[in-house]
Length: 238
Length: 287
Picture 1 (cartoon, rainbow over the protein chains, first blue to last red):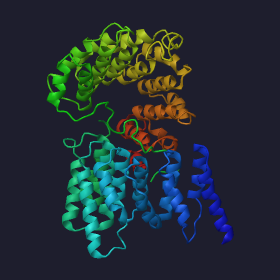
Picture 2 (picture 1 turned 45 degrees about the vertical axis):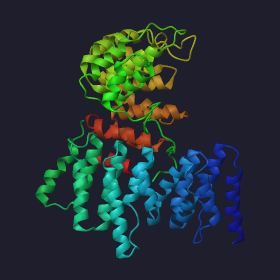
Picture 3 (picture 1 turned 90 degrees about the vertical axis):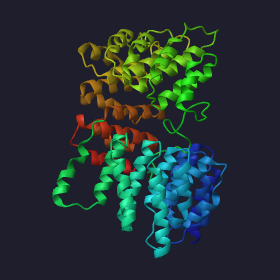
Picture 4 (picture 1 turned 120 degrees about the vertical axis):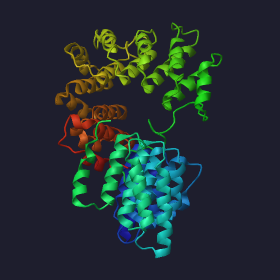
């Protein structure tokens, strides 16, 4: 045990003492890929969370990857660290929570998709809302979380940036695939994807193609219709 | 999620959100009124940008922007360049609105003294696919890397806005021998961004894979700015064989997604053996 603790302490110290942005990136990558085994180290999590606020994008990417690998145990420290005055740190926290998929991140993901100024943050939030881990929830909270995620994604269909609408299509697909939701929810989801697939309503070709692919994957079809639809991907010219 | 090799920035990126200076929300009517008046040029500047950004379809938008483009003056460093700032934004907006009525005035701007205005006009003529611009662009680039592509004695800028002009030739799409002959020497320009623009144009015009190789190599360039340009150039062409190298590039996922969008939307003409679904699945993993 002492050897392991020394090693991880060394990694944490290396991050704390990094004196250049490259040294910070290297130390964070090493700490993030450290094999924590069964017991996740609170200090290591705190250190990775702190890196999110350092305005060092390379190191922040590594820290996000490390926090996602740590999973649910990192969620509470991330939520507690949120600082409304540090936009950068918050954006990285959204990405980490989207990747972990823990339902405790729901509120932050909803907020981020609805109103974050950065399309790259809204896009991460849309994916995260589609892949929240609901398996362990009781039926009642399961339904509540599912409905909130769906409502957030449906509103995201009207985002001004194509890449966010693309991510919303992907989010709707993963939500639809994993949930076997109520018929009404399933219908809403399919209607939203159908709208994103129409040239009259969606002007970006790649969004239309992705939405139609999602729609096709969510809707089981008789073979004859399936064949007719296999031509949907041919609309490649704008 | 983002692989460790990529660098999505937390701050708004190029193409990541609004880029206006004094960006309070205004209506289309307000934008037209601001462009129509002449007393406050910062209002005109913002209005011209607004009309382009919002793809205004109002019948007065294009005539007002053409008038704003005509407001330019011979360059006088002592007199302030506000009119030219308005003219440049008007030129950019006219490219986005897609109305060929703007072509004659943009052509005239290609011979303006202000290279910033020539740059904006060249890009817009490319967006409008204005075949009439080819002859002027060729004339201005004909002196090659040592002439049009030479660095100015008084600034780091080149004699001509070569990057914009080369990209415009590629976008317009006239693939004559004379066009190729003027573009090709720029593939040996000392600046990687100019080489990238030249290869992009040649790849668009000829579809020959030999022009893709230098672009793919630039994805490994030590400077992030060059890697970003090569990503955008491969995306603009829609060169699907570059799918894997694009995904591996050390740059923001936001830019890779824009490049891959190009591979989906423009790519079928080059290599249909890589299916759109494959590119879409690569995009999914960059979100």
